[in-house]
Image (cartoon, rainbow, N blue to C red; front, side, top):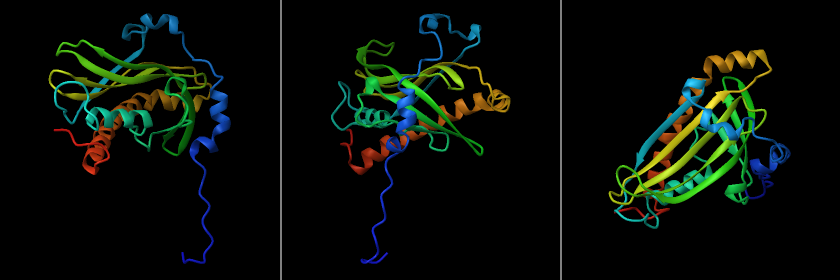
Amino acid sequence: MNATSPATATAPPLWQRYKTQLDAYSKAQINYDLDRVSEYTAAAGWRLDDYHTLLPTEPPGPPVAGGSFEAAKQVLLNYSFPPPDLITGIFVPDQPLAERVMLLRAHFLFFTFWFGVRIGGVTDEQRDSPDGPEQVWGYNYRTLKGHFEKGQITFTIHKNLRTGKVKFQVQAYSQPDRISNPFYRIGFKLFGRSLQRRFARGSMQRMREQVVAQLRQGKVAKPA
């Protein structure tokens, strides 16, 4: 394009393009009973997941400014770690995290599906672990009515204050919800579990890659 060519219009961000859907999900209810969470066990037919991956280590002690923990926290806050060929999270960027509603755009084969989730809690605390005290930051989100699944997934960043090790952890409990379309119901029964595992493995890899990239590019200070 030369200097006299008309400027190309900039496309609006996704959260503006899909504001109607986001507003609709802000009024939607969770599609399972939070009062019965203690009953959501493998024996009762629920899927329980627990994945983690190590990130670049920091010096022992509290998280350092510009270190691995801080970089991972930013990736988590931006929801940029899920594999984009599976899931894209759309949300209003200046909405407080604790009040965030997300529109999830999910891809499978030639199909695109839209689901709603809501942040159910934000974690920012120090807790004990078998390897010593650790600083933990993260959040969970819960499925809303219309989702193919029901349940909760929790994403957390952990730093062991004694060793300096940093890890990203994903824990979830889930179960297929009622799917009225028989074609989608069969497809989700056949491929839903493998897609969950692809999401988890891809999220682990992308979190590592994005944290390392931030440290190398100097967007955050490289830890000792």
